[in-house]
Image (cartoon, rainbow, N blue to C red; front, side, top):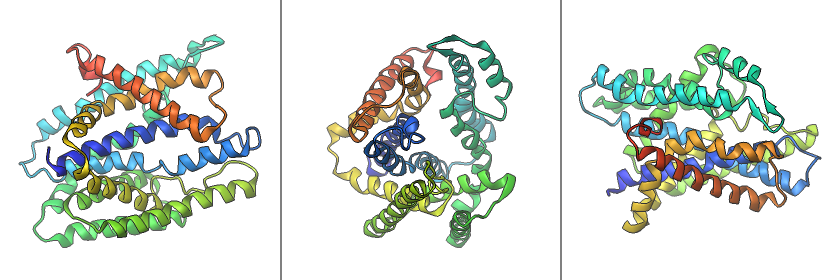
Length: 333
């Protein structure tokens, strides 16, 4: 498998693992002073070091779809791209709306009704919020294709530069209102294509990304200590420049390292990558009992990665089982 294809598969796997880690550590964040400081700090550090995961998924989409030079077909795009994700999203939203009613204390259908009533504007379960800003990007992709494929790179570079500036101003408090998500998440499509097309010096990406990561972690820890409660001070947002730099670093590192992975391990990672969306959709099922029984463990620096790995493996095999039947494969595209 060519490097330019395989590194995308590698990115899908590491991003799926990072997303699970974020959801595993979720209960720890707001327990400052209630759990050992070492556990709370470990959880916040892992959280800050994983915020690139969602942006990377969007960057992969941009790298693949905006680099596609075939004539654009609206019917094909809607049928094979949009609906392939939208229909499973609807079904899983219903499933998790039902799951939300179930707890160790019994079943509360009122919770399901409340969540389904707000479904058009709010996710029925925490991980499904991703689709509310990802699906609208399918509207943006056809609009970006002309600039992405224009012979004069200035059009593309200008759009990318404006987006980077907006992400910088967003960290300073700029509010773009109703179009904010569409603009700032949409820019990751451009960034993914830029890094896909160009070999940016890895040392530069590493320097900028690590500097942004250190600043992010320091701000979250120091501001939480100052306020006596958990806060990221906005630095864990996906829509700000520090997260952009960290995501670019991870993207570049995977692209750089991909060529060093043996063909045997490449095949294994490709098998995992094919189930990445299924893993994303399924993993909260295995986190449900953990959250119901308290959600935290001692030695968080060790147990969070271990639980993440176990949930990843269980989700992978479940997704693979669903994908093996034509009756259920569409649920885990």
